[in-house]
Length: 396
Image 1 (cartoon, rainbow, N blue to C red):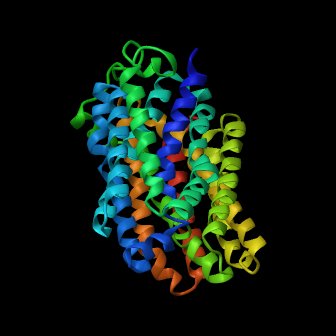
Image 2: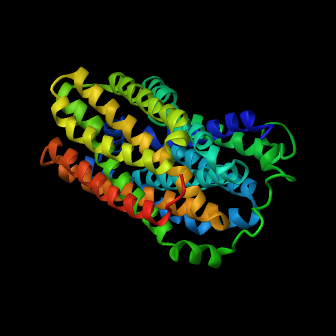
C-alpha cells in the first residue's frame, strides 16, 4: 500500500486513455457517419460490433489470473495502441470498425487487470473507495479527453484524435515493459504483482467457478441490464440534442464535458459513501435514482438548460451505480478474480451491443420510448440485485 497513490495515478491515466477512445464516438457520431457516408443505423452496427467484442475479454482474462497482472496490462495496452493506430490509418468504414474492436478488446483487458490487481492488495472494507478512485478515469475521459478530441477534429480532421491515443497507448506499454521494478509500476512488476494470487485458477477452473456461482451469475445479469439501459440513452443523446436544439460540433464537445463533470460527481459520491453505506445498499440507491432520472429526461428536454441538467442527473446516478458494483463483484470469487471481472466487463459490453442495436429503433418512436425502456431495464437489474443481496448476505 505504500506506493498506492503513484500507482493509482498511472492506472487512472491508462484507463482514461482507453475510455476516451471508447467515449468520443458518441457525441461525434454524426461527424463519423458523415466522414464515411453512412447513416445512423449503419453506425449502430459498427458500435454494436465494437461492444460485442468486449465479450472476448473472458478468453484472455484467465491468463491474467495465471501469468500476472502486468502481463494483462501489457497485452491490453498493446491491443489498444494497435487499434488506435489502425483507426488513424484506415481509409474505409470496415477498417474503422475493426479498429474500434481492437481498441475495445484492449480496454476490456486493461480494466480487469488493474481492478484485479488493486483487489489483490486492498482489503474489502476499504476497497470500494480505492476502486472508485480508478473509475474517475471514466468521467475524466468526458471532462478532458472528449473535448480535446473535439478540438483536434475541428483543427485537424476526424482521424487526428486516434493518432494521439495511439501514441499514449504505446507510451503506456513502453513504461509497463521498461520499468518493471521501480517507481509507479513496482507493484505490477516482478516481486509484488507479477504473478497471480496464490491459488489462482487456470482457464477451465476459472470458467467453472464463474458459471457455478449463482451470485456471480446474478451480478453478471444485473450489469447486462444496467449497461443496456445506459446505452439506450448514450447512443442517441448527441442526435437528440442536435435534433432538438441544433447543436453543432463545438457545442456537442461542451455537452460531453458537462456529462463528464456529472459522472465525476457520481464517482466522488462513491468514494465518499460506498464503504460506509455498504456496497449493496449503495447499489439499491443508485439503481432507483437512475431509473427515476431516465423517466425525467423527456420532460427535461424542453429547453437546452434543463436537457443538460437531466442528462447530468442520469449520468451521475448511473456512474454511482456502476462504481458501487465493482467492489461487490471483486469479492465474489477471489480465486478467479480477474476472470469474473472480465465476465463482468463482457456483460457490460454485450449490454451496450444490444442497446446500440435497439436505441435507434426506439428513437424512431420518440425519445420518450428510449427513456421508458431505460427505466424498465433498471427495474430488471434491481430484481437481480435483490437475488445477489440474498446470496451474499452478511457481506457489506
